[in-house]
Image 1: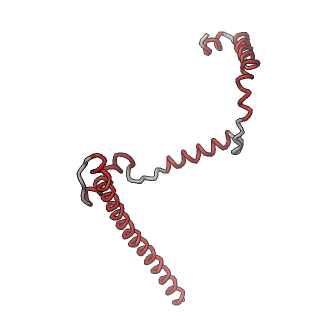
Image 2: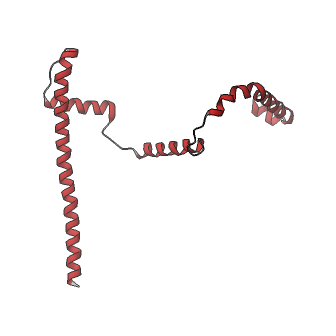
Length: 145
Protein backbone atom coordinates (compact mmCIF):
# COMPACT_ATOMS: atom_id res chain seq x y z
CA UNK A 1 0.00 0.00 0.00
CA UNK A 2 2.83 2.38 0.78
CA UNK A 3 4.39 1.86 -2.66
CA UNK A 4 1.09 2.82 -4.25
CA UNK A 5 0.92 6.02 -2.20
CA UNK A 6 4.55 6.84 -3.01
CA UNK A 7 3.95 6.43 -6.74
CA UNK A 8 0.77 8.50 -6.54
CA UNK A 9 2.50 11.33 -4.66
CA UNK A 10 5.52 11.12 -6.95
CA UNK A 11 3.33 11.35 -10.09
CA UNK A 12 1.45 14.36 -8.67
CA UNK A 13 4.72 16.12 -7.81
CA UNK A 14 6.07 15.41 -11.29
CA UNK A 15 2.85 16.69 -12.83
CA UNK A 16 3.02 19.97 -10.89
CA UNK A 17 6.74 20.31 -11.61
CA UNK A 18 6.13 19.87 -15.36
CA UNK A 19 3.32 22.44 -15.28
CA UNK A 20 5.53 24.92 -13.38
CA UNK A 21 8.39 24.29 -15.81
CA UNK A 22 6.08 24.92 -18.78
CA UNK A 23 4.88 28.18 -17.24
CA UNK A 24 8.43 29.37 -16.54
CA UNK A 25 9.69 28.43 -20.01
CA UNK A 26 6.61 30.01 -21.60
CA UNK A 27 7.18 33.23 -19.64
CA UNK A 28 10.83 33.35 -20.66
CA UNK A 29 9.95 32.74 -24.31
CA UNK A 30 7.24 35.41 -24.17
CA UNK A 31 9.66 37.97 -22.73
CA UNK A 32 12.29 37.02 -25.33
CA UNK A 33 9.74 37.36 -28.12
CA UNK A 34 8.62 40.78 -26.90
CA UNK A 35 12.23 41.96 -26.66
CA UNK A 36 13.05 40.64 -30.13
CA UNK A 37 9.90 42.18 -31.62
CA UNK A 38 10.73 45.54 -30.04
CA UNK A 39 14.27 45.39 -31.40
CA UNK A 40 13.05 44.52 -34.90
CA UNK A 41 10.51 47.36 -34.75
CA UNK A 42 13.21 49.82 -33.65
CA UNK A 43 15.57 48.74 -36.41
CA UNK A 44 12.89 48.92 -39.11
CA UNK A 45 11.69 52.32 -37.90
CA UNK A 46 15.22 53.75 -37.82
CA UNK A 47 15.96 52.30 -41.24
CA UNK A 48 12.78 53.44 -43.05
CA UNK A 49 11.02 56.32 -41.33
CA UNK A 50 13.80 58.94 -41.24
CA UNK A 51 14.50 58.50 -44.93
CA UNK A 52 10.92 58.20 -46.15
CA UNK A 53 9.10 60.68 -43.91
CA UNK A 54 11.92 62.67 -42.33
CA UNK A 55 11.07 61.44 -38.81
CA UNK A 56 13.54 61.12 -35.96
CA UNK A 57 15.13 57.85 -34.92
CA UNK A 58 13.77 56.07 -31.86
CA UNK A 59 15.26 53.97 -29.09
CA UNK A 60 14.22 50.51 -27.91
CA UNK A 61 11.63 51.62 -25.33
CA UNK A 62 10.01 54.01 -27.77
CA UNK A 63 9.67 51.09 -30.19
CA UNK A 64 7.97 49.03 -27.47
CA UNK A 65 5.67 51.99 -26.82
CA UNK A 66 4.78 52.19 -30.51
CA UNK A 67 3.94 48.48 -30.52
CA UNK A 68 1.72 48.81 -27.45
CA UNK A 69 0.02 51.91 -28.86
CA UNK A 70 -0.63 50.24 -32.20
CA UNK A 71 -2.06 47.16 -30.47
CA UNK A 72 -4.40 49.38 -28.44
CA UNK A 73 -5.54 51.37 -31.46
CA UNK A 74 -5.69 48.67 -34.11
CA UNK A 75 -5.78 45.23 -32.60
CA UNK A 76 -6.46 44.95 -28.91
CA UNK A 77 -4.36 42.53 -26.95
CA UNK A 78 -5.18 39.23 -28.59
CA UNK A 79 -8.44 38.54 -26.82
CA UNK A 80 -9.68 35.43 -28.53
CA UNK A 81 -13.38 36.08 -28.38
CA UNK A 82 -15.19 32.77 -28.42
CA UNK A 83 -18.32 34.52 -29.70
CA UNK A 84 -16.45 35.53 -32.84
CA UNK A 85 -15.20 32.01 -33.43
CA UNK A 86 -18.72 30.65 -32.86
CA UNK A 87 -20.07 33.11 -35.40
CA UNK A 88 -17.43 32.01 -37.91
CA UNK A 89 -18.35 28.36 -37.39
CA UNK A 90 -22.06 29.10 -37.78
CA UNK A 91 -21.41 31.17 -40.91
CA UNK A 92 -19.28 28.39 -42.39
CA UNK A 93 -21.91 25.77 -41.54
CA UNK A 94 -24.70 27.91 -43.00
CA UNK A 95 -22.78 28.64 -46.19
CA UNK A 96 -22.08 24.95 -46.70
CA UNK A 97 -25.79 24.17 -46.25
CA UNK A 98 -26.76 26.90 -48.69
CA UNK A 99 -24.46 25.52 -51.34
CA UNK A 100 -25.65 21.91 -51.08
CA UNK A 101 -22.78 20.66 -48.94
CA UNK A 102 -20.09 22.68 -50.60
CA UNK A 103 -21.28 22.24 -54.19
CA UNK A 104 -20.81 25.73 -55.56
CA UNK A 105 -22.34 25.26 -58.99
CA UNK A 106 -23.62 28.63 -60.09
CA UNK A 107 -23.87 27.72 -63.76
CA UNK A 108 -27.69 27.54 -63.71
CA UNK A 109 -27.96 31.14 -62.48
CA UNK A 110 -27.12 32.39 -65.95
CA UNK A 111 -30.75 31.52 -66.89
CA UNK A 112 -32.27 33.51 -64.02
CA UNK A 113 -32.85 36.75 -65.91
CA UNK A 114 -34.41 34.93 -68.82
CA UNK A 115 -36.68 32.96 -66.45
CA UNK A 116 -37.82 36.08 -64.66
CA UNK A 117 -38.66 37.82 -67.92
CA UNK A 118 -40.60 34.84 -69.30
CA UNK A 119 -42.25 33.22 -66.28
CA UNK A 120 -41.27 34.90 -63.03
CA UNK A 121 -42.96 38.23 -63.55
CA UNK A 122 -46.23 36.58 -64.60
CA UNK A 123 -46.05 34.15 -61.66
CA UNK A 124 -45.60 37.08 -59.30
CA UNK A 125 -48.56 38.94 -60.80
CA UNK A 126 -50.71 35.78 -60.46
CA UNK A 127 -49.62 35.43 -56.84
CA UNK A 128 -50.55 39.04 -56.02
CA UNK A 129 -53.92 38.65 -57.80
CA UNK A 130 -54.62 35.44 -55.87
CA UNK A 131 -53.77 37.11 -52.56
CA UNK A 132 -55.98 40.09 -53.27
CA UNK A 133 -58.94 37.95 -54.37
CA UNK A 134 -58.72 35.45 -51.51
CA UNK A 135 -57.81 38.02 -48.86
CA UNK A 136 -60.45 39.33 -46.53
CA UNK A 137 -60.37 42.77 -44.91
CA UNK A 138 -57.80 41.58 -42.34
CA UNK A 139 -55.27 40.34 -44.88
CA UNK A 140 -55.56 43.45 -47.04
CA UNK A 141 -54.76 45.61 -44.01
CA UNK A 142 -51.72 43.45 -43.28
CA UNK A 143 -50.51 43.74 -46.87
CA UNK A 144 -50.76 47.50 -46.76
CA UNK A 145 -53.34 47.74 -49.55
